[in-house]
Length: 326
Image (tube, rainbow, N blue to C red):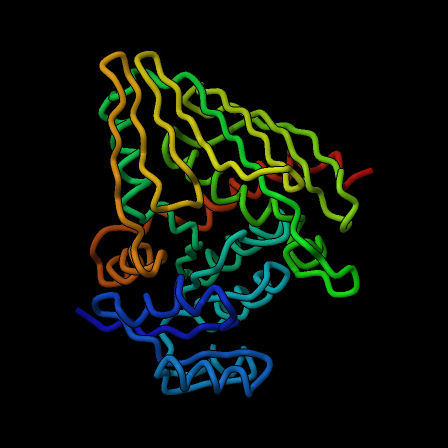
């Protein structure tokens, strides 16, 4: 099989452990170039991760003939522009989540890649992780009977912020919203993966803590194409932390954490409780990266495409539109 050669645009924190080494450790895969606007930081990353080339200009990396696929790991406000650039160069694109600032930008990315006839994948890597595929398998096998509803409760304690130096994840002009957009996007995407696409959604959002302009409280409800109903509560100024997703069926339920990946998947039925403990991989994106490499080599298909990822952005748009359209 052909060795797929990767270039990273935006070699920040997410690429240090979650993704970057996965390009080097996946079979038939090689990381050959990285880019960051600060050339010194790009050079430092390349040195520490044994990457042969570094750039401080995204177009230069895209135009490198040794780069087969472009991985865009910048904040969301740059995803559309870099995706268009890579597509125009005829190179497949793998982009971080959330896919873009909103659904309209996601669609523009899909259109750009379709026009250039290049594939577009998004880093909703839970679609590749063994833990979440085990939960999907249990649902498909009927372990909880017919799925009736899903329920998400996600609480975080208040984080300390410098109002004069807010992180990009709570600056809507860069991230598309607040921590809800950053974290709930994963949850909404894998629920769609497990029980089918979400076709209707609504919600309410507010800012209760007053620490930044973005939302810090969101409640939502939705319906999947399969008829399954969903509810969710995301609070980022709680007294405690809780990460719980329930998939409830006619004969039992599955309970698991979205971000504590070493926590077990718990199956509860009349027969009792069974736990499936699946260790978190060293590099959480490696399994999804492997599926992209395999697809490019003609084997199988990656489960996280631009089309599937855009749906998560559409759902979040529905839940947040009342807050941002005031």
